[in-house]
Structure formats: structure tokens, C-alpha cells
Image (cartoon, rainbow, N blue to C red; front, side, top):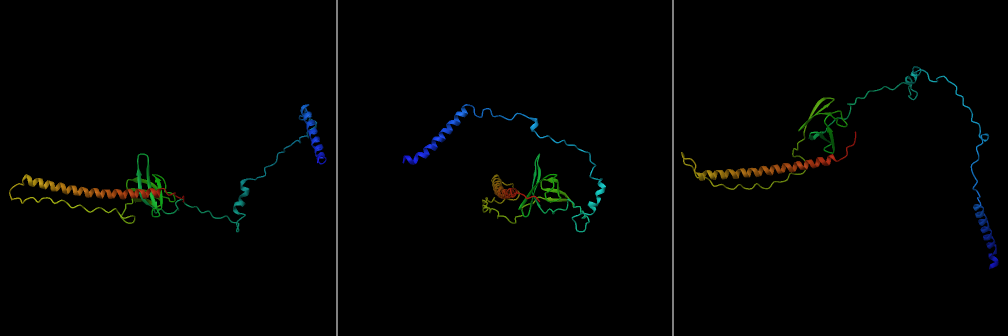
Length: 244
């Protein structure tokens, strides 16, 4: 067994001796005096001298190249294509409706709806409606005046006509009016008594209260419908508008 390990022992011993010798040389300063080579101009190759000479201008006058535009190289008939001026007013017609008008101290804006409420546009006073040649010229509480190719165009605020949407909230049955005591028949030539006057005043007060309750119910119904329309407009306004 020891005889078989003897070659490996000699190899390990030789490696240890080599490492020890290398360590000793490093301690004595091996590689400490290694540095760059001192500058020697004779070793550097000479830099060639560059001599520039004046040359004549290669491009001629602009008039010498008019044939390039008169006979285009990449057209089959070698004739320039006609240029057609496209007016900025030749755009898609505007078929929207006016849904809201905002008039404050600093903000004056009109909101238009297109494609049956699927597209909403917000345009300030003086701006042009995107995708058309119509400009918002005037703003009033219930209408807007547009300036465009055909002159002026007036759009009135859209008012709900009761068609489409959800059914209105049904009102409760009208409460029966309390029967007022019938005043006694007045004899001709005699003024009504205090009892008759009080009964008439009580009947008129009850009738006025019933009419006021009916008016309040109608107002509540109108406010509920307006809130529903505002909610629908806000939902349409949140839809991103694609530039045309």
C-alpha cells in the first residue's frame, strides 16, 4: 500500500517545494521593479505629413439641375405628377348634437354627442370640433353657434322627449281630497257668516296643499330624470375618444 502511494508523495513534495520557492522570490522583491519602458522617440513610427490642396467646387448652379424635376427618374412617363391642393375644410361633416353647455367664470365649454351617444366631444369656446371644420363661435345657456364652411350653424340643447331609456318612476295614486263641509245656502242679500267664511278658507287651504303635493311629486320626478341623464353623460364622457 505504501509503495503504491510513493509516486504521489514525490509529486506533492515537488509542488510544495515549487510553491515555497515562489513565495521566497516574492518576498525578496520578484516583480517589484517591473515598469513601463522608458520613452524612446526612435522606436515610434513617423507620422506622415498631410498636405491639403484647394479643389474647385463640384456642384454647379441650381439652374443646372432643373431637368431633374422636369423628368423624374422613377416615374414611368418621366413627367412630374400633378399637385392637387387639398383644403383643410374637406373633412368629415359634423352630425353631432349638443348635450351640455358649461358657462362659468373661467370655463366656457360645449359637450357634443355623436353616434347615438357612443362618442362625446368637449370643445371650448373658440376651438374647432375635432374631425370637422366647425368652430364654436358663441355659447349660450341652451344653444351654441358654430362657424364653418357653410356659414353659421345653430344647435339647440337636446331635451329629453320621453322616448327610449328606462320607464319613468311611477307616481303614487293621488290622495283623495278631503271633503269640505258644504256651506249652507246663502240667502240673497245677506253677507256670509263667519262660519261660512272659515269653511271656505279651510277648503281652499286643503285644495292648495293637494296641488302643492302634486307639484312636488312632479318636480321630484324631473330631478330624478335629470340625475339619470347626467349619469349617462358622465359615463359617455369617460369613454376615450379616438383622434380622427
